[in-house]
Image (cartoon, rainbow, N blue to C red; front, side):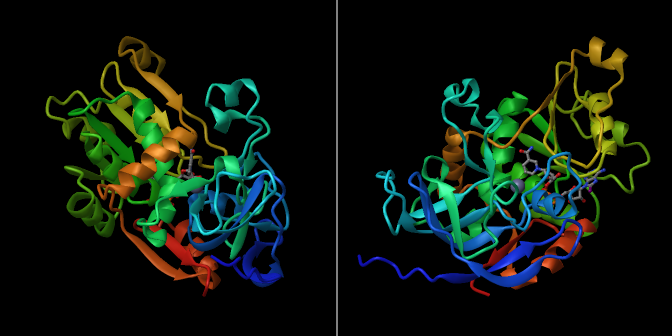
Length: 354
Ligand code: 8ID
Ligand code: ZN
């Protein structure tokens, strides 16, 4: 195969100033360093984390100007001099973890998301809302060529993250997991991964569209509308056969309140896994119930390279199907506006050629 033509300039969506609308503009294409690859991004999912970056509402500064995005799927077009195990033309994904030191305590025990030197795509380094994106070769997701690049994009953050969180929950086949924020990007994939892992799910979110999606498309056996429920704790417990509550709760909502309710409705010996990152939020749990129910409360942060490969293999086998809508990259601000209002069922994916 001849070397692909790599342009000098490209279109990108740029955060020039935190809290301002993103700008569609032409920028330079970067050259990969010795341990990096350059990927021609075809599609990128849009994660709520990208909106946190635009809003600047986390206690962690972004680079500025910033090209956001960390669910990018595309084709490798160039590689650095030290990269020998990735070929030009390979299909690859850019994940949130763009690179890590591979040498610290955490990296050595495959907890690389905890590496203090981790580079974060679309946050501390430019991400996937551009046509050509750089990533450390050691951390790219390897994609089989039979995988559709648009459909797989949301798996690169949302899918990997919820798969890891479900593993962290310790829930076993046949047990019940409440997915809080089930109608969003992470939540919709969480139901599909849970189903593929033999778990039963109760979906918690709001609105008839999300209810329909969760119960008719994604496999949840119950849906609880948090905006309509008079007593959410009771309703969640009542949705389990014996009324004792779900074995685990995976919190992917972007609101503090559900983080203060989950320990109350989780089953004795159950586990609450925090994944969503609402700005300035604190966890709260009644000490009495937490102790006498022996509840575990923990956080879960994306996944390591093995979790990523496993999550992608589930997808490749065709057992993970979550709804997504494709629009042009130039329409990214419209997606952020809808996301801010909680008005997206499933995930948006942007096509970088438009
Ligand atoms: O590694 C991680 N921990 C990780 C990885 C990726 C994303 C964490 N995140 C974080 C994001 O930064 C964001 O804070 O997970 C959160 C969810 O990301 P998302 O799925 O991309 O967001 P979304 O598509 O906007 O979905 C959020 C859903 O939460 C619902 C909304 O209706 C929406 O469907 N929701 C809200 I806001 N309040 C709720 C409540 N009280 C609620 N659902 C149930 N109860
Ligand atoms: Zn994400």
